[in-house]
Image (cartoon, rainbow over all chains, first blue to last red; front, side):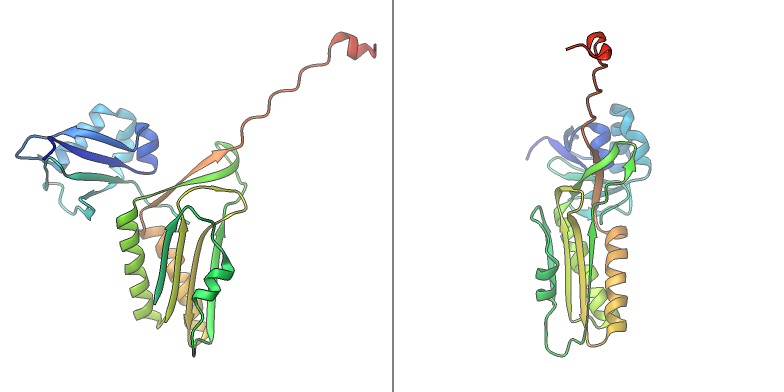
Length: 85
Length: 147
């Protein structure tokens, strides 16, 4: 099991951070999604405004509670408001 | 029956119409969205880059198709969206619905495009034309009409 989680950034989040994906170290017991979002905002201040209006997915499932823990090997996705078409 | 496609390949209205063929389907509506050369903060828009979270987007499109089948009785559905760069004038999205009657087909197609924009994880970013190089001012000799 890899020691990191993968953070995937889409749309405006990708543009703000300048990358589509980040490897993020998480402890074996995991990290609350809320704490991961705060850490992302601290590490990438240009991403912070987008994070405030985004939804989050853990392993492709929409997170309804940010208390859920992100563990090593998980994929955490940042979804800013959608705008296809 | 739904045809769902998330792909960098060009989209064709004729191909969408062919997908919607079926016995007893008296109403068929196809909507195609094209990239406009609007003015924006990037200057004149030359293209849109579409970013898609593929697995959740495909799932959301399948859910939308099921809803349209249940709500409007749509028997054939097309939900196609481009991924990656789409230049102005090209089709970025096609939705289509075929029903026994026109009212349901129009309603279903309207529902599909509105919900696609609001609920499917797809994002677009505008890309402008490269700025034109400013013209060189005429040299003094040229301005005097020499040569």
